[in-house]
Length: 221
Image 1 (cartoon, rainbow, N blue to C red):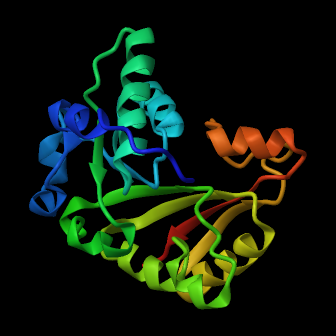
Image 2: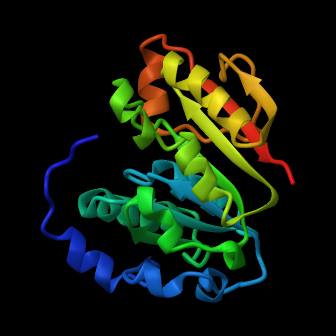
Image 3: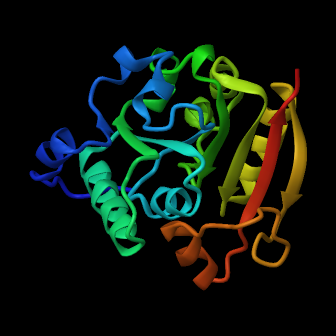
């Protein structure tokens, strides 16, 4: 999603208590950055405006969350949305961290010591042209990187509106040694998540009559 430059985003992020501006220096030590460092860590790749991460994090205070995006403007909006949701819930933001980084190079900021329990990939770019498939967040090239920091039996929760991306992602998961635990081709009719948090894209596609595809894939050791 393209978004206009927001000159306030970078200063606000740098001033935020839950923004990590030097993620490469935190590699292997993410747990230490949370108030409760004993909690499991879940990771959202491509958090956009933060609609998903703000709602799931405020509802699950016993889990720590890291949300990554590459665009300052997106992260700025995510920061504001998180603050608003937590304010409405009368809670302090202690279990969410935002950071800016290129997901294709994610191995530079996360390692096996971080023991990520779950990865969320919501409505990522489908990169439909064949020569761009390796850029997909579910491509085998990326899945192998995730395995470096995903805990034993760690999970990937993946949602998309794109039929081709979904079908090919199932093959990617199989090739990379992930077991398909649950799958649906119509998430809102056949829910596979205990508490599905709708993203902005999910709501938009659903209103257009497009079925949401989803899968839970577990790393097998």
